Amino acid sequence: MSAGDIEGYSQQGAAQRDTDARSLTIETIEDVEPLDEQFGVEVPRTVPDALYDTLFGQPKLGEVKLGDRIADARVFTYAILDAAKVVSLPEMLEASGLEHRCLFKGAAYDELKDVAPWIVRLEEGNTFTRNLFTRSDAPWHLWDKEAGLYIRSRDKLVDVRAHWRKFTKVQDEAGAWFYLRLYDPRITQAFLHNAPDFADRILSRAFPWDDLTIITCFEGRAKSFGAARKTSKNIPVIRLGSDEKAVLRHLL
Image 1 (cartoon, rainbow, N blue to C red):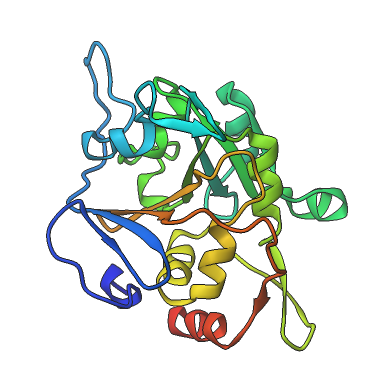
Image 2: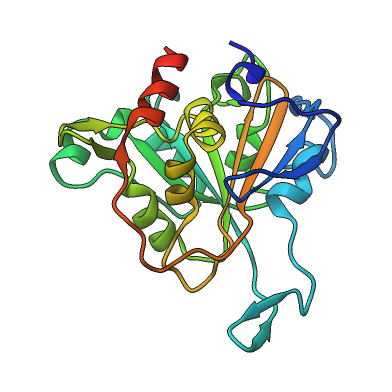
């Protein structure tokens, strides 16, 4: 399946911006080339040049407003990764030196941690971060694994984890429970394009900052999704309705 199969509308040109009827701000970045092994490079890149600003850019002084106060607050970069796609992911994260947590807890963590979703705060210059964007035959170079998705937020890892945990297991309108792989970039991108109620719920947080951005990257194309308006603090419980089930059927 190509990226165009799940977008819901066409886009032209690289890095173009649009605002759709669901109040999403969408940026598309075409022709994203993975890193190679960078042998002999004195200062190796952490991410492809085309993704640097999207994943590690920071606001200029005065661009951030919290209430009536202007602040210069750092935006953090997180990845939510699928251990079912990456052999020994928990061990890789432990060795990385990066802050990380499993999205599952309790019995689900004990039984499924080796195939569970994990959140990690990425840092520029870190070897594990670089490996996510590197293509080679080495098993620790993960570009071709499509291992997960990326989130930019000023919130701490504990808050972003708490928000994303709401989507690991959800109910449909009849009350049945389902595990939802909303850490698969293809599923997330399809929902953001084609399931407007769920998209609003994903991007809505009762956090201090209204800045969450989701980045998907596969098949040489990246997409950045952000909320085009400040959302209500009264966020309804999400259900898997007809739109969401249609998206999942299309992806099967």
